[in-house]
Structures are given as C-alpha cells and as structure tokens.
Length: 594
Image 1: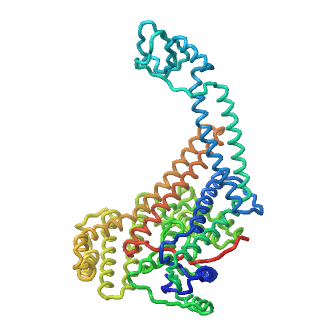
Image 2: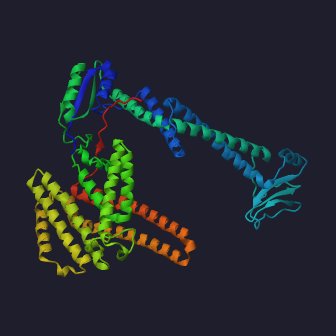
C-alpha cells in the first residue's frame, strides 16, 4: 500500500533554523519542501564538492581495480583524485598536441627550420606542400619540385623557385614552430611516462579509497539536503518556517519532538491539488523484492495512484518464465541464486537475489512443463523431464496451446486491472464502466482465440463473445465515457481498437520464447555438425555450444527487460490508469561515516 501522508509546517525562531533542521534530520521522518529557492555560500561549496566527488567516483569505478580498503580520509582522497584527474587531463591535451606535431613533421624527415629560413633570405622561394600523387600542381618557369616522401595516398614535396610563389595556388602545409622531430619524440616519451604515473596514482586512490568515497557520498548528500532545508526555510525577522510531508503513522512522533523543542507545528490532510506529495510504499516483508523492480526500472506510482507492486512481482515472474522458457537455464540460474543467497546477509542484496531466485524458478517451472531443456529434442529426454503433453506435444498443437495461454494471461492481466479499479471506485457509475471494459477485454480474448489459435473467421464468432461485446459496449457507453469531455468522446473508438491490440500484444510471450528455443536449437545442431566432421573438433564444438547458449541467455535477459516490463508498465498500467508520476519519499536523515 501507499502510506498516507500529512502536510506539516513547523515554526521556530529565525535564529534557530540550524538547530531545527538538525533535529528533523535526527528524527528522519520529514520530507522537506523548500519554501524559497535555497542559496548560500555553504550550499554552493557543497554542490561543487559533490560534483567533484561524482567525477572522482566515476573515474575510480571505470578503472575496475581490485579494492583494498584502508582507513582513508574521503575528503582528502577526493581532493587528491580530483587533482590527479585534472593533471591527467592536461597531460592528455599536451600529448595530443605533441603527437599531432610529430605526425606533421614525420613525412619531412629531419630538417632545421633555421637553415630553411637562411635559404629564403638568399633569394630562394620555398614552399612545403602536400597533395595526392596524381594531382601535383603546375609549376611556373624556373621552378622545380623536390619530392621528400610519398605514400599511395599523399605526396610530400618542396617547390623551389627564384621567383615569388605567393601568388600561386599551392597546397601548402602548416608545420609547428619547433621542427625538431627528435625533440617532439622525446616530449611524447616524457608525457607518456607522466600519463602512466598519473594513472597509477589514480589506481592507488581507487583501490584504497573507493569504498570510503562511496560512503562519504551519502554523507555529503545529507549535508546538501540539510543546507537546502535550512536555506530554503521561509524566514522573517523573528520566525522561520519549514514545510514538508510526514507519514501519518509517524506524525505523533514528530509532534512529540516539536513539543520538546518548544516549536509550533501545523498539520493538515493533503489537498487534492497538491502534486508535490512523495510516495512511500509499504510492501509486506515477504514481497519486499518487488521494490527492487521499481528501483531498477526507475518508476513509482503517484501518491493518489494504486500500489501494484505485488501484482507486478507475480506477473513479471510469470512472463519471465515464458519469455526464457528453458528449464536448463532455469536450473542453472536457480543453483547460482541459492548459492549466492546462502553466502549473502545484506538485506538489500538478499531482496535482489530473492527476486532473481523467483524468476529462475518460474523459468525452471515453465521450461519443465513445456519439456524444454537446452532445446534438446523432446523424444530424447527422460519421461519425467519431457513436460506435459498440452505444452510439449510436437507440431502446431503445442504452439497453439502456448498462444492460447499468452492471450488468456493478457485478458486476465488487464481485466484484473479493470476489476481492481472497479473495486476502488467511489462512484457506482465508474465501477460499472470498468466492469464493461473488463467484459470487452474477455470478448477480445475470444476473438483472438478464434482468429489466431483456431484459424476461424469473424463470422464464426460464438454467442458468448457477442454477449460480452454487447454488454461491455453498453456499460462503457453508459458508464465508462465522460460525454462532457469532447476529447474522451473523440478518442473512444481508438480505445476499443487499442483494447484488442493490447490483448494481441501478449503474443510476444510466445514469439520471444520460441525464438529463444530456435536459437538454442541452431547452436545445438552446429555443435553436432562439428562433432560429426571430426572428433578432433570436439573442443571447438564445445566452445560453439557454450558461446551459443550464453548468447541466447543474454538475448533472453534482454527480452525480459523489454517485453516483460513493458506488459506491466504499459498494457496493465494503462488499464490501471497508472502514470508512474510518483516522487520518492526522501526524509531528512543522518548517518555518520564509520
């Protein structure tokens, strides 16, 4: 469920802003809403420090060094790392310029620019040029060309003349002021050594201080939140005010703290037009892994929307089982998750592992029921592994059964959303409108089954489907459309079409699962072909087999991320009227580096 909130305003003396915010931070329940745009030298300095820390942390993580945490001052480590990064950037720029100069001089070999200037003072006009070998310029009388070097793509040459060459259209080259190629080579060598030294310094910092910097990042975030809350208070000559939101169940705790401090508090119900209310999900502990899905996808229901975390957990797990659909993969994943779960005691990591374990078991279960073990032919599997006949029997029958299951899940999934909304509706008219949409979705299911699974035509539509369409259509027209909203009236025909497309879109569960099976089967056949060619190719065959199945696992994982999440966040959420506009509840809190 979504925790109900109260909007609160706390009043204190203007010169007690610092102490007030500190007390709220220790309490850890107030989600602050700044009254005025915060601004102060301290806040600006903290934001600059955070920017430096994020840059340092990103650089340290990109190095992928083996961590060896030591007792390190994180602020000093950030400063040192930032200095190393800045120096490294300067070295990279100097190295790029030096390599460019060296590349410009390389075709010309070694020469002294002073000697070239002396020749010009003696009356010789010299132009250093570069052009394609087939497009050398035409020379005036008395001018000669001296070829210095040549490649298939470019010729480098000097044009020498007793008459000025400035008026000629020559492909002149630009050379650096210092034409000593050996000097540039030495500078490049020195810069490369400096670059390696800076990289080693950053690696040492990353190895010893990354953990401390990550922990300090949270502390710095708290300091910034503290400064924003303090500087954002609406302050007068004598009083200052801090506004925010607190969970209703923690209101008494806040009131007690305010009374002890001698401040004033005003609290009220959330107004209907308040769009700044944060969302705090209260998910039962046994389903806490559902929060991992929201955090990973980056979605959150709005404060006035419905918590669908358990429904998303259940259906995403089912969809994952169907999208991957290989019991061999599922067994492999299940063993890994059980081992990792036994070794890990961190609560957040265990939630992630529990979620992956549930999905692995669903993959194992559906793959077992359909008799799919690494795409091995069903007739070569033991009877206990060959699945149930309804899903594993060969030919088109099994495919039609899986398609039917996909469409059934789609209709059930979306009609569940409509039934849920009907249950939550405060008006009987709205409830009947959602019931009408639910009936219309089941009629769409029967039509989809007729056309795609049974191979029939619309003329063969049964009485049940027609009755569902008629009753659902009438309920929608009477109760499910706001006839005063012209936009809703105009969009109504498209809503009927979309409801059919929504049911049809669940065919992706079959399509992705089938493609995963055929990819695995193709690599199995390739492996068998290599083995039949020669037993000496067994190592190569095993590499092909392992690489193929690893590739298939990666593609199946992408399928879950794309299609499994889509069916929950678009199709289901559309019928649930979820906009995922929630703002996370982030109360002022305090933690110390240890």
